[in-house]
Image (tube, rainbow, N blue to C red; front, side, top):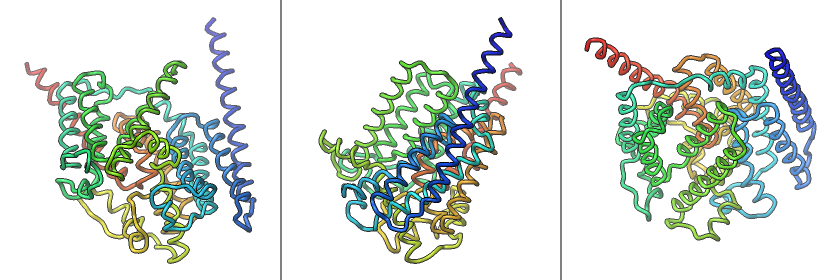
Length: 437
């Protein structure tokens, strides 16, 4: 019987591997076709073919990788095309896109976004990141100590106030620019909150931990901060999906739960801009025009237009991003500082924008490879510290795609190691105290 089970398991694994290899081969053909499809004239027909190829490529990515950090990151990256595509075809838009402040170059959007996705996916597949993600997700995360749990809760609550010290009201919850005036110098203190929550994730069923998750989520959303909460939800769902084979009913439950959270985030975004809650018609309009993605889609087009008009910045944004990883430092020459000289800046930094303005499509491609190497480095070091680094990465996907890498670097280099060190010290001191008793 044991031999039969082993044989069947081997057959299933070989079948899955064959499907992934076929999808990988088709994906290479798809991108080669995309590159060979030379658009001499940008027409709706030509752009439609490009759009079909990138969407078909995304379907193949899920066939290759299933649910993992690269497939979700690439999906969010592709989704930035949606507002531009709707405006390109229908003339319907939201925010700065609707105002026509920058030309919508959907062809260039697709070319640059697909370059990032292709190279990231290629190296992810070659480095077998999916395999190591699965192995890492099955390992425990627990610091089994109540003092640790209490400390993490207190850090999450305290730094929620540090990050967003104003008391929100319905009429001004997130539209005030001073919502980012943190109590401590520097930036990214909101990321420390997310890290503290993740260190308590294994104990989320405890009332105190669940209460902390709830308070932090309400406080962030009341201040219009959606990226962190979106990332927290997405990251936890991916992590749970990696660890468990979910039944159909649980998948349906997660889908509807995710849909409700998505609608809540749309409502928060609408209230941030319009100073009021949307009615049903306004809510459906926001869903139809992808209001949550309009700003970053606009910024992708701003990046392309900036390069066409002013050329490249030759690494200035890259240097600023590296420097900004230090939480107590405020930097110049950021992506925002360059575009604000020419265009209105709604806030954000699409994942390709910095590399694109610095070095063009070559910079976009190299950044994708570097990102894949970073992911590989983390998932192949299966220690408790790197499991939390991995979990933080999962929960940072929306922030990476929409707001750039600097906050995420701060979390990975400083906040996760700091919380890990303090947690281990508390456990060690508690153990010594117990032994002495």
